[in-house]
Amino acid sequence: MTFDNDPQINGIGDMLISSRSLDEYRAMFTLTDNDLSRRILDCPGGGAGFTSEVNRLGGDVTACDVAYFDNSADDLAAIATSETDRGNRYVRAHAEQYAWTYFTDPDEHQRSRHDAAQQFAAHRRRHPERYVPGRLPVLPFTDGSFDLALSSHLLFSYTERLDHTFHLDAITELMRVTSGELRIFPLVAVGSSAPYPRLAELLADLHARNIVGRAVKVDYEFQRGADHMLVCRHAPSTAPS
Ligand SMILES: C[S@@+](CC[C@H](N)C(=O)[O-])C[C@H]1O[C@@H](n2cnc3c(N)ncnc32)[C@H](O)[C@@H]1O
Image (cartoon, rainbow, N blue to C red):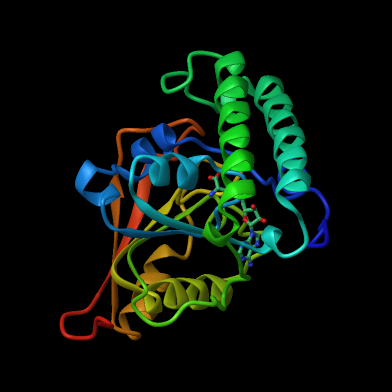
């Protein structure tokens, strides 16, 4: 692994390469069947099973992540599995920081994330073209390449290492490659239950770039307090075609 190795972040350690499932993505982002029929970008895709599962169902999803630069499908599968265990150890040790409604217990959390990592690995081996290396705030896609962009557990999750300007530029870039909308989840940092403190300022800065964002409550909460997504759209008549 060659991306940042900053010191501990709120006790969970280095940034996780996590592996969430389609089912978890559906819940986090309130995805409908109609949403899943659109051209979707998942950035960062990490070791998520989302791209694999939706493409198997006939969908059109591309994942993008900085971890795809240096790691083969097999290497990243091994990393994603050990990262799942690292995240699960943290969850077990801090069970009170989590709501046990989506997952009933830490065993189910571990099983779900392991399954997603396996799905990711198998799919990336067969369809490497669906896993594009990229490093926000710059993406290797032309304007309006996607109808819907999803971004989970990077923006707002690691605010100790990713500053306000990074958030503004990353969201602007995700919107450049999206003709429809961008959904970001969650709005709280790892180890915290309070929303991003500069959200109002960020929304104003985005507005100045013709991007309209609003926080929307979702029916999913695992990390306590993490039950909102940010939905961004182009201001009328500024959407890329
Ligand atoms: C916690 S994982 C989330 C993965 C996936 N969205 C999920 O929910 O399972 C965070 C991911 O962000 C990726 N990442 C970190 N910095 C990035 C950057 N500047 N651009 C793109 N991806 C980045 C990491 O490689 C890691 O896979």
